Image (cartoon, rainbow, N blue to C red; front, side):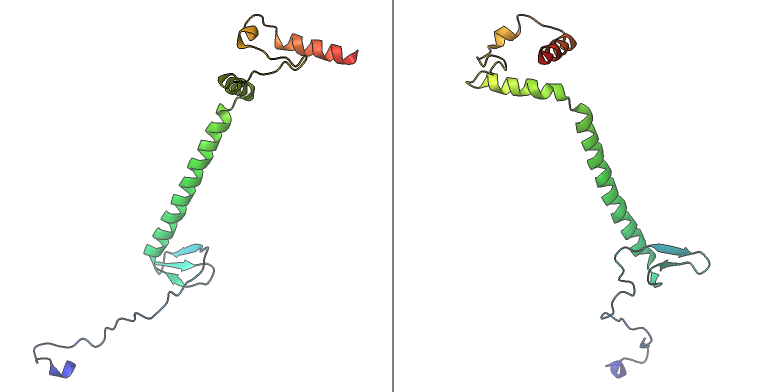
Length: 137
């Protein structure tokens, strides 16, 4: 085929494309070393020369993954900070009152209407001390 070319066209036989080759470095968690003298990037695990573009892509993927983890942790932090344990009981009471049931009094077992809860209030510490005193009897 190259013999049939006109004389004005010079064949370039020194340049060939090797498509069946595999990458020199197949390490999974690569660490890199930058050689500033020879302007190369080396894999510290296998010592192979790595293409700088591949290094940039690898770093970009790892930063993208880390940013996703940071966002997830910030969301979890926000949920933890907004969690109020005393509201859990109130939410449960609300869901009971929205249905056809009534919550029961823990002492006598009778149903408690919502209107009965609004009649009187007592300080939480006073009630806890009273209960401790009653348990001692």
